[in-house]
Image 1 (cartoon, one colour):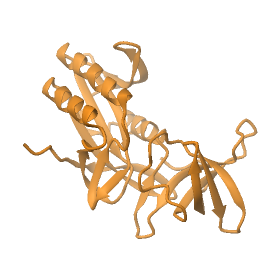
Image 2 (cartoon, helix red, strand yellow):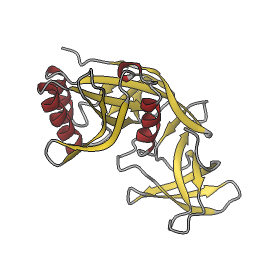
Image 3 (tube, one colour):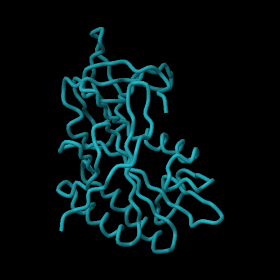
Amino acid sequence: MRFQTELVPARLIRRYKRFLADCTLEDGREVVAHCANPGSMKGLADPGMRIWLEPNDDPKKKLKYGWRLVDHENGHFTGVDTSLPNRVLRAALMAREVPPLANYNTVRPEVKYGENSRVDFLLTEPSLPDAYVEVKSVTLNRTPGLAEFPDSVTARGAKHLAELAKVARQGHRAVLLYLVQRTDCSEVAMASDIDPTYAAAHAAATSAGVETLCIGTYIDPQGISLSSPLALRRPRG
């Protein structure tokens, strides 16, 4: 997926109120950008970081820039917009570019299921069990090469796992897909010290038959696309 508008580089001044970021453009102008990320963004919102913004001229939008990337200035990038993974994955699912899910012809986003929940994608094919796919954006990195989820306590995430477990027990496919929006990681793990309840919910869902897929991404200022599967590091003991 290519960005709709050419990104421009900037330096982060500060992130505040979760969804706002003060930034300095290369010409010295200070602007406010929308930050489409409700998480803690540990390690991704330090003042002075090189970032990339997407300008817009939409009169309906109050802010004229959206924060899209962190540039680690070592050849690696992190995507910070949590709305992008679903857009990238939808295109990949429809093009049958996700091998474990490539046999499904019909891809429906945001389908109601469970108790007041919506699954990110419901995949259907007459000869196959329905596949309920929940997508999580992964950006936390505290150990070289290891991406972790979540980066803050997420009761909503634990609820999604419980809903997927119910679906699996009913005989459908239930898939939790961790899309790693970093180019510097080759493994994924649960951040059990940050949210032990979520880690326990993931273990219980796995026991109930929920599948876990981890997929990496190619990221640069031109766009984001899927790369290769990543390994899931199982908890010790």
